[in-house]
Image 1: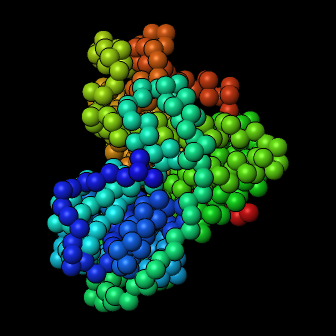
Image 2 (image 1 turned 135 degrees about the horizontal axis):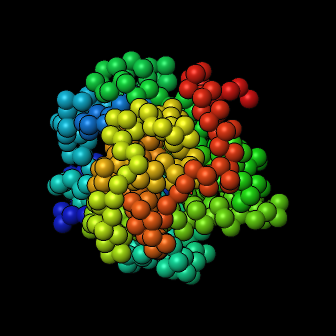
Length: 456
Ligand SMILES: Cc1cc2nc3c(=O)[nH]c(=O)nc-3n(C[C@H](O)[C@H](O)[C@H](O)COP(=O)(O)OP(=O)(O)OC[C@H]3O[C@@H](n4cnc5c(N)ncnc54)[C@H](O)[C@@H]3O)c2cc1C
């Protein structure tokens, strides 16, 4: 456990604290949550109750109906699960005019110790001891201990210790029940109230909820069950064919912490053992690729800059900066899915409608933005901006890492071509040869016209 834990400030334990606070900023679940379990352990040792605190702020530029809905859809289930443990639950929903606020300070003021998720969110100044726990990775980032520059370098490090970490997290048991009342500080969320609650937040209503994904733990479990029953056995064969629907669609649920990579890996490994299936390809994505992204997020000096690219990639971008581009689109044209390429437009529509793009076509989406932007800096800003606006799995280590992958991160030089230089390129003819592009375009057109997935 210790390799998952980091002390984030020098403040001591508050002697007047009435409870231990788990400030949930990423892992919105009670199951398989190392941070919650760690907070519960401290509470039991101090003979104090545990309080779980969740806050959904509207105080960031891309706060919108889609993200608020996906998070609010998870609140009532999470609250019920937390209360069933005997812990207290406080949820706050400030409007877009409020950044910090008295209400938040009051919750922190009662805490003896604050435990939070080790994640991309910045570290606030607190007068109380603040501890971060890595509940997102299977092998804690601290156990790798250094930046890895490619999948081949992190893979052996992960596999060396994986068995030690691929174990269920014991169920949380609390000694003291929480009797604290947070009247006036807590907002109750009933599923039927969500549109009205969002209406009061002042967030952008022009990005509607996903056509496809509903938030919450139950939905995460439903997606996992569907993957195990209907998709795992054909994942390795069909994962690059969008119309085959063979991938898990778990990335929004992993990003919001409704489910943990650990639970998914355990469930997939068990099903593979029972049914004699090959799960290696899936586990490579879920563990090695995903944890390479978390490793990057932990150790890279910046996440959102082309400056962190390897030397060869920065050089080739510089060398090809003046190459003539056959098409040049603005961020607005990309956003509106208004390019000359109906396959690319379909990928952008999928992002706008569903809130994610199929993994294989997401590479095409990124590579073409690089090819059809005025320059690499513009392309990078467009990719980040479109993720910030629409992606339910955006603002994640995977977002920053995979967008930079389009520019050569964690990759190697390829034969030289115009515009791309030695960065790996993708072409439409290749997509047509390897996948059923027409079926995908038809499917997204249907979704665009009907505003919902076909029944069944
Ligand atoms: C330009 C670009 C942007 C991307 N942005 C995001 C993003 O914002 N958020 C995000 O989660 N992923 C992102 N990815 C990675 C990948 O496309 C998605 O993780 C995957 O498509 C999610 O769908 P799924 O859950 O059905 O994946 P599955 O194939 O079912 O994989 C299961 C899980 O493994 C992990 N995974 C799969 N592929 C990768 C990968 N290449 N790198 C790291 N982890 C992976 C994800 O957590 C995923 O949910 C991006 C890829 C590209 C090329």
